[in-house]
Image 1 (cartoon, rainbow, N blue to C red):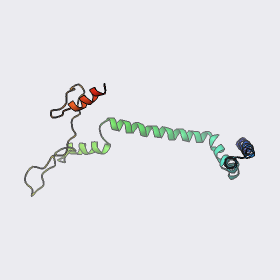
Image 2: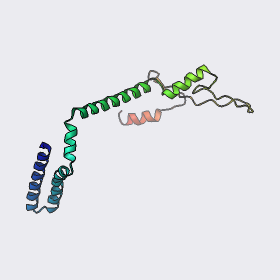
Image 3: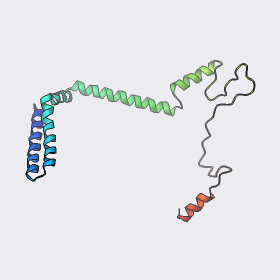
Image 4: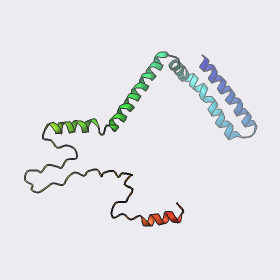
Length: 155
């Protein structure tokens, strides 16, 4: 009942503002304001406002929203822990199976197939992260031109 009254008051205020705007010869803006003013009344007449009011004032609905929030937080927490642990569950399961049997672990060289001779190429390994303490460029990298540009600009 209160929600319907508030929506009616908002619509009446909007209609008044639309009338003042039309009086000032700004008909396009007045028409737009009039359209916005009709929305709250339309929502009341369709029953949307009553439905939202029933949802907003029921404790069981808020309990449901709370449970959804807890579930969402649990999903986020497990994803964060999984990322910090260094792999997905599928990768850990495959590594555990490989340790117990003769299967190949992820990142290990591929086994040679029967009928083929010679060594198989190894799987591409991740490059080792550079330590910031090293500070020196790897052999073959020349940054003198970059240093010159930085010095030119006073950096």
